Length: 322
Image (cartoon, rainbow, N blue to C red):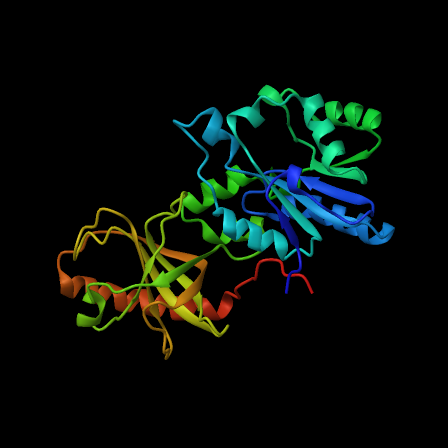
């Protein structure tokens, strides 16, 4: 279980007098590239008897700087906090990104770090790190300012997968396209969501395929369609399943996308239970069928395709500290 201390902003940080190793970034998705930066801070802290931490931000700067077109986030704040905590950090700082904070210059940002983290020994960032008002600062700027402030800077090269850099934007594109297996390869764990089971219209039950109706409203919507998934009950038991995410054009066109999961095993899940759904493979896009019987036949095919696929798809858990 994570024992990561959490602080709402740099001004609230209180730490023991030990060397601080700090990874800085937005870290949306906490993909393999992010993990390599953060793990460098953790390893250095462990070697020196120091403390390993992350400084991240919320909301995404785009929500303040271009609110008409903000970045669509891979995970909500609470989920990012959960995954970061699983890496084994000593502390996590979530700095609110406001219009005022956006005006902080690169030099002022470094001074904020030194003021609120006086034992700061080293900062860890990706090689494409930008910071300060108008993104004026890069890694070279950070190194110059850090030298004057008395701490070191380590920049990690971007990791590549199949010849292209791993990035949050690339993962977002893959999720939006339904290319879940490729997204999972970049994340280093299975894309997942958490949701509470709520009452539905019970339409699936009337055609022989009862579903869990899950209220899930992501900023970044995966491609509408059918997926092979793994469902984790509150007690931790994992169950195979087939999920439909979309607008249900055949039986009842909805105004907002719905996530429905048909569990391929016996379960006692009930309304109000919170489950975790790990998305493992895209099976087919959503489409409108000619009627309920045609839909029923396709769902049977979907179920069998999911059963065939799932034995070869092992859900990968997000990072968890020992």
